[in-house]
Length: 379
Image (cartoon, rainbow, N blue to C red; front, side, top):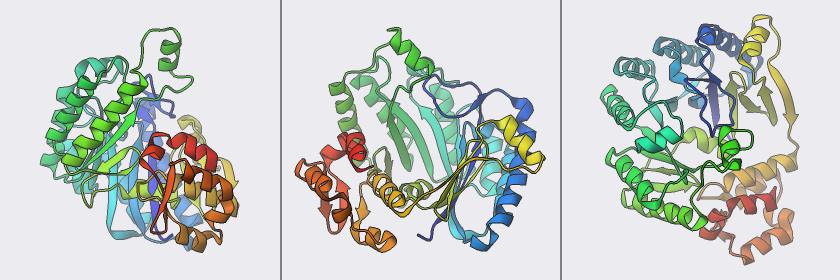
């Protein structure tokens, strides 16, 4: 694997969404400048420690949280520092996540001029009543306006995040959101089924019977409708939840799914280099304090052995419609999946969950519907 990505985590949000279980902070504008300085310090430490192992970055991704709660000039400076500290491949994909109503037209122009060439907009729904249920801080009009401003700023590779299977959502409401999104003609769509995560406000509300989710048959119809509509619109499914026009697949995420190496910057961020997974402290205040005092930010260092790395590569690779190459697995790890998984693999093939097509192990259509269960068998 020759690809190398860089992920920079900005944990700040306007407010915490009730379905979100990721590390993020609502408010805390007082910490923005300090956090940006800490990231700059970590960049220099990281570059120095891994300088002899560097190769050109093929992707950079600013994620969150909501990165655009930082000033556009701050984000531009951080990107410039990334490019100064790490070599970057020609034509590298440089993405940033934005939420509607957190960036204006002038800010989008600043980001485009700075070098960001891909935008991911956290829309989630294009129905105002659903956005209220999700406690999102924007309206449908805000989302559409943000998309249009991004186009005017010169972004020609835009992703929209959408969610289906929302409380009280029916097939007609989901189709309306899908049609509205396709009218905007984005290059990429990330479409996720709502999952109720333990410890979130939504989990508590569900336990209290305050909302009901669509039944399984309705959710399956939503997924079927999605695949048909996106195929007709020229967006091909290339991963469980991701669809793209030709040439617009998210290279940064593909690197994750292929178990490639990446640098992780920021509180709660993860890095994976030379077979070691590093996890930073998920506390922005302590993250800043440690860097200010010249201390290490990693709370966990996990060295993956050959078998663990092999299994991870199989499991993450199967998320993609292309699956994983059996020959490449054998070349990379010196292990054959057919021998390692033995009867488990043969059983999943007999059950119609997996198949092998021209050397590639792939989930079948049925396997994609039951992907979690298949992965559990292979982990």
